[in-house]
Length: 298
Image 1 (cartoon, rainbow, N blue to C red):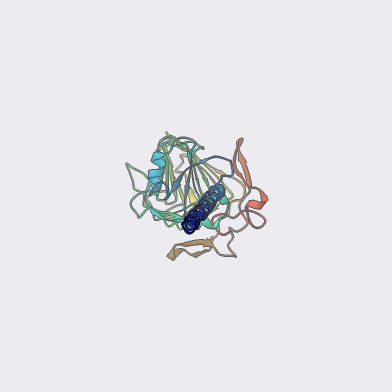
Image 2 (image 1 turned 90 degrees about the vertical axis):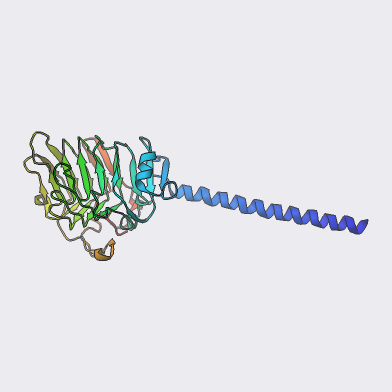
């Protein structure tokens, strides 16, 4: 009887030890999840509603499932798709938005596969529709009646915001980089537009629906002359803009990091306010060097 008792106690103790080990592992897993969520906190304190591809396989599915005010975070990778904000007032960002690490801009690519404009805003979006921290490439815009840009299309009174976005390798009839028509007014800050064809920024031809574009601390190939308004709108060409080869490490192989001697390194801006609206607000510990980069290097 004593031997049986001892054996039973041994089995019970073994089960207790195994249970304790199991609980320790579970608690550890929970802590890791919490810490990982903490890494994805946003600078503005907004809650991350959707993560791509964890929650949805494509960016468009994430946009479709979102509601106004949501933050959608996209993990590094190349996403071959053509997306449309469909009027959603959301922030669509790479991990650059949560970490301020500009290397995520070149690692998070939306590839239009020459099927259409890569990103469309055509439902009256305003500055609360934000695209931040992506490389936009391989878009193909069409002519009349669609009239789409290669990289970005803004039409029907759409006025989205673009921050730390690189637009390269796109083409269209007009506005290889970005095309505006129908009273549209996008704003571009810490933005690179290079190797897009024909021009980098184009406006619709008819003067009955003038457009406006605001550009600051950005690298635009061709400079202010790289924007073709067709006498149908205004270019607000603000401080900090340059026209210089950004020196991508290897654009032909999809590496859009900036070389160490790139003119876009340390030439962006940490705080930018335009017409009462703060578009960029970075603290000193959120970038490397004397100023943030345009595009992707840090």
